[in-house]
Image (cartoon, rainbow, N blue to C red; front, top):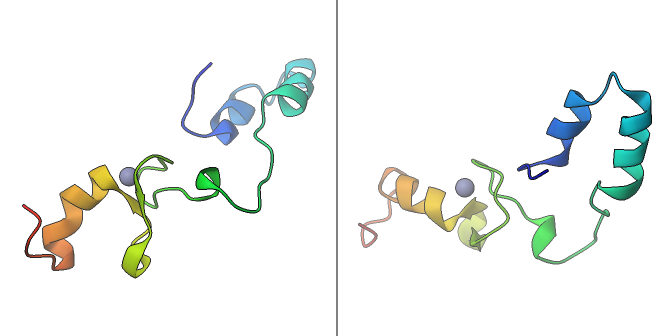
Length: 76
Ligand SMILES: [Zn+2]
């Protein structure tokens, strides 16, 4: 099962207590203090290609979409 965020799965299997317990034990990602999995894109939730510079907190794909709206001139 691949999802963008584990809370989606927890919502889906919330009414099945056995599966819910098993998913919590084995498949919920560990809480981390640092590393690339601690940062998510504010728009789409992706963990890949994160841009944190200037407090953007967007992935490279969303940055490309919103760059001109944000006032970046060089990025086309
Ligand atoms: Zn994104």
